[in-house]
Image 1 (cartoon, rainbow, N blue to C red):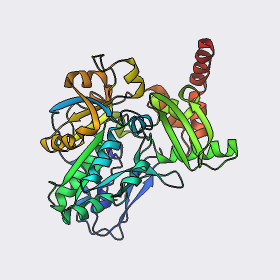
Image 2: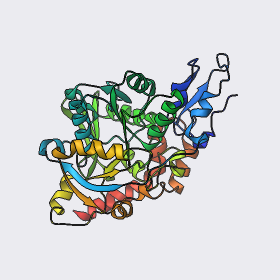
Image 3: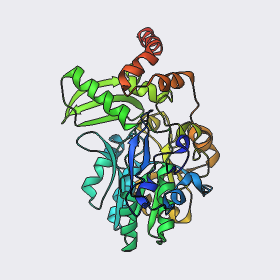
Length: 376
């Protein structure tokens, strides 16, 4: 059997899927619900490109941040409809205004999270918001390569492991990356789409409505909110929600997320964005602004700095110490910690997320309900 990398190290970045010249690699959910590559040995020509492109088989090149900013969109509506300071939204809009093709993630009609691209400003709204699930890259590394080969400018936003997968893929394809801007997210780890789909189906059955959209956050408030068109089907706060509680407790993340090679101050992209947790007050930054949402932007390369300067007229920004950003966000320092609840979940998981997580979280959810009741 052709093993690309150790199963527990695989991030599901799909660089191997994109590089294979015979298209003999497909993605399957393993016994833990993690999307992993499977090689069709009947087609494989043993060129080993899949092993060469895999970030786990290569030294990961990281850049030390040059600058750190606290920032948010000057467009109050854009900021209000985003989950932090709307930095990704600004990047997409300004990129398209400057002739870029943009790559991001959105849910399709079946609520499957996928990467896609657009060069139309109106379509970037689908990329807004936090998504606590692993996106399906598909053939978007190959599409990015084709755009770069045509000398088009692109911006690609994803998790750090996806960005490194893209970097390795493009390096092997030997294409100039001068027109590429990469933006990685400060990542808490990625749960499986299999878990999310199972949970949505459970809620659809419970509320007898078919969902076509969802959100995980409303500014700083974590909610699991399903929609049928524009009507809310359910609105479950984190403390009462099985999926969000499990995610916050690092029960659902991939095995590779628990030993993440990218959870460090040094980054694999041109720009890193996330919430600016733990930010201290200043003349412009106060409780009110924090409640609206403040983004962290780490500028990691000169190329990233030049792009950020293009966006700067549309954003409020305040220069902050890099140490403050790193100290305020645990996932710029370390991976999520393994815990007994996660071990229990993986031992019991049988393909039915709701059944398993109810068994695992029963006592935890009861305690959370009691705390909520006592606060009233």
